Length: 115
Image (cartoon, rainbow, N blue to C red; front, side):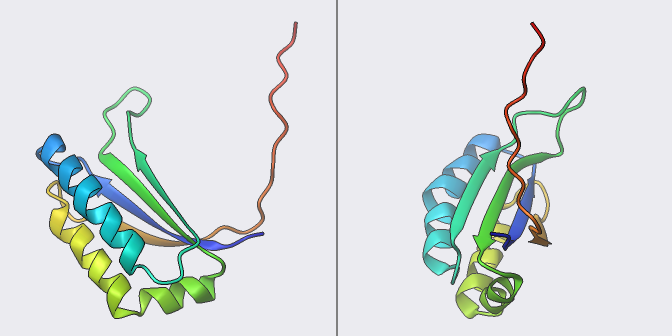
């Protein structure tokens, strides 16, 4: 079932270890508690990019049942508090926030390699 999500891109922090400590110990629990109506959270560490160093260190996806549910959540004080905390801990520059409509979900068959 298609839904919507907020995607947050965190720039590479000035001190990775310090950022990770605050992100894992403070921000993830805060986001889970404060973001209203989320159906799933995905917290990803960017390990690299092909041929270059990635400008991003973390990607967070906050899933919602619909764009309407996402927009209603984004308007609440508790979700805005979580977003403000994300900005305050991002030492490599402000994180980027995107609203995304997932559209149709397609499941692909596993890749079959020629023998």
